[in-house]
Amino acid sequence: MVLLHLVDAFADRPFTGNPAAVCLLDAPRPDDWMQQLACELGYSETAYVSRIESGLSLRWFTPVIEVPLCGHATLASAHVLWSVGRAQGPISFETKSGVLTCERSGKLITMDLPIAELTEVQPPVGLMSALGGARPVSLQRTNNEQLLVELDDEESVRRIAPDFRALAQVSVRGVMVTARAKNPEFDFVSRYFAPAAGIDEDPVTGSAHCALTPFWAGRLGKQTLRAQQLSKRGGTLEVALAGERVRVGGRAVTVFTGALTV
Figure (tube, rainbow, N blue to C red):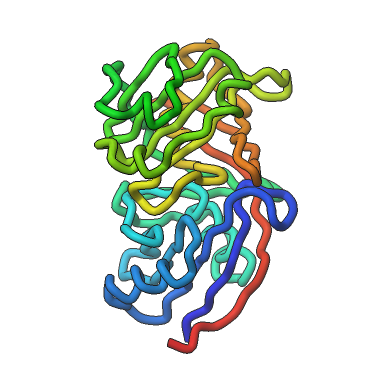
């Protein structure tokens, strides 16, 4: 029997944060089955956890593609394993981005993720018009084919209204738009768009903070920061730079649990 859980990640109450479907597989399933289920469910990510000889395997699928890294669905997967009693202490997942470890302290779950390297670049063709003519303070490209667009202030991040059809044609996997936070409770804010991957706007994006954390740590001279993602659902992240790794923390809430019949 394949158990299916819907978890709101980076959330301390239901219907906020970023929803992820988590499937605890009882046996290997073909890639096309996993992709079809992710499309059927329609969440920004569906995570598949399976037992392998060396421990636990974790894979992530959007409604249209498999991705090499997803933070919120990793956090959701660890939350599920602890909730159903399949794990007690720290959890390590073997993934396409290497071994990812999750730990918990009370209700806070902290993930150890690989840092994203940043290089300053010129805007690719079509980017700025797809972002409504936004004028970046700086523009960086990550080593995993995402763009980090820094804007003047938090209100510019809130107001941005991308043309998602046009943005899907830009040669990039995803675009994070960010600025220093206005609210003193936070250090920086962001939004994340990935229409080419089937996600117009992702509510809260853990993997984006593999780039946002070192970027703002350098800007602000701080190793530990508090971040807010300004999507409609919204979410809060506790992040820290740790050498060549990034620690990304948040809470999670299970919304429903069921069993697949296929």
